[in-house]
Image (cartoon, rainbow, N blue to C red; front, side):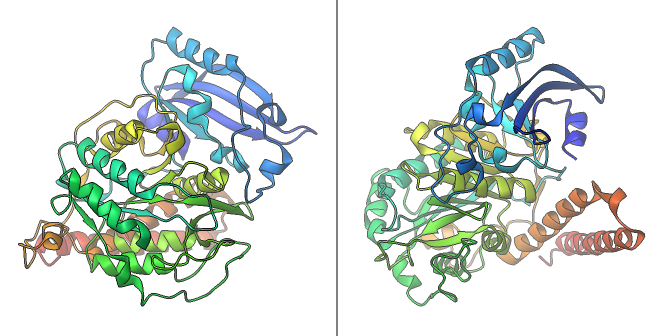
Length: 459
């Protein structure tokens, strides 16, 4: 399906393939341009996995595995840049990871290839239509936690800069940010944002004291799958939004890696942070349900400095990038201390104006090529005036209810899964093909019903 995207948008891509047929694992890189539906190789090379730092410890998925030892020979980036220059090409280079690619999706390719001189964007696994949303507003949840079990990082300073950069970066939309953080950080965050005039007009910082009733449904601190059901953090955010939908959920957390799966590391709860040995982990399945429930069509992850598991957080982002239709971003704060690259990424992804991407080695971004090409977003339900419009909370009330946005996200997610499944249709039995067609018809019915109710003004 990524091949279809390359043909449809005539993309220039770097195809990355993991070859394991011989005694030595190899990573093959092929630079190709697609024109008139045909792919043409411009340059290629093969590298031994260990030559670029892919040791058994890294590929074995150790919880504290890092990516600092991953390198590419200097001549690789230079050769790619030279080949693109010969073609007179000045656009982004799309990273196409051929499955199965193992840990390759979690590597910092944007940093490794920075010397080629082009923006690096990641190609998703299937075509997806633009998300149904309200183009006039952008509603962002920004969530940060620093468990005692992991290395300290300055959440108030980090979030204050992030919020200001995000609000100022996005053009053509009113940006609204909802901040959720550990109790010990909340007062300072509020003071910092109030000092730059963002509180109330663009930002709400939620009080963690309101989360005291949310308890873990299952305590499994050292779960091998790094997943914990019923996170009080997710409960707190979902309840606090009180039926209002969100466009983007952005986490600032340490990563964790276990059983080749990535997850986020949180304190025990927003008001409890006493465990010096274990964080509380939230994995991809639970996060995905949370995002759909809030109606979020995009997700972002910022790695704090001294992140416990860079590979774990990157693996989680890659997992989302390949199974969700909306933009997925990973941001390395250590490589972007002023958050300028983050601001540029928000400007590119979420502004209504068409903006050309620029090189950003701290950003790993997977998105549909249509978004970069400037295709207009689909419009959601008409805006409604909230009750109690004089209060700060009401001033930040969203244009569509969460349950409506959640229904759209469910449809978009299922359409994406169907397109991905259709790639392997030839291997299906006749019964499997009928089942897939039946699911597709059911999703179409839900989509038509949503459109019909929207036109009638019921939603």
